[in-house]
Image (cartoon, rainbow, N blue to C red; front, side, top):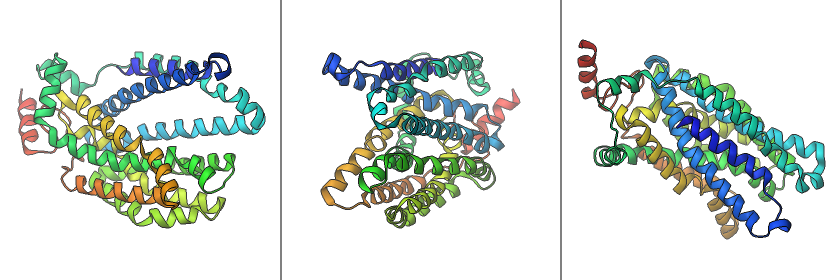
Length: 364
């Protein structure tokens, strides 16, 4: 599945760069763009749950937070490299050439990246946790039965994860996806300045992600999430007001919000997969994550833009982040702390039932 997702993503991204112009094929051009963006979305939906589960199940229990944080280092590196690539081409080619043909070139990079990704994934094997479950007959061959068991037995975990993802991805999409548009169209920064601000912020976040992941192994995932949710709730409006003062304020404001968001990002791979047992982990994580992201995270930029137009308030994105943090806080109250807990077995990690099952497995 991980190999398939990289092929889908690289092919669709390459395809975007090759779409004929509207003058050449008319409405078929935007139709192709929407279709290829959907393929990218399908790829990301299968990619993220699988990658996080893969890292969590391979990582030692006592270092799952630290090692899992590097998934988000890679994610932010991709965001930053993409933005830097666009910024570089914009500076080198100028606005006219960039709008005419230069925008296509960064998409063409997907082809060699896809080949590299496919090679790397061809060298990987399934995790020891999954192989142990397969050896004991704990996995299910029928997808329909797995889905039924997931919904019937783990609906509470699905709802809790959905609440955490709501907080995570409303903040994520607002800060990392919507911000260049917001800084350019709402606050009056130039296009290049609007690209530069998130790049600086993301590079700062990348430095602190492993430290936050390591800290979660020592003090637990929940304290870091509470720190992040509370900090973003308190600082969202002040930092958005600071960003409205100009480029220096935008850099500082984004960096502060980014660093407050880092504890959530750093612990995704350690927290979310551990909310489900092995036999439904990938499916439970992927379904809850993607449904919540589609409903709340992916719609956040458009909703923020619409609300800013309707209300005239430039701090609407900050208010949406505050509401999302409240939803995340409600979910976090009921989440089981799983720092240091094993992901082996068919019981929920971090529970007494899981401890009893692990003792039985080790005794065999």
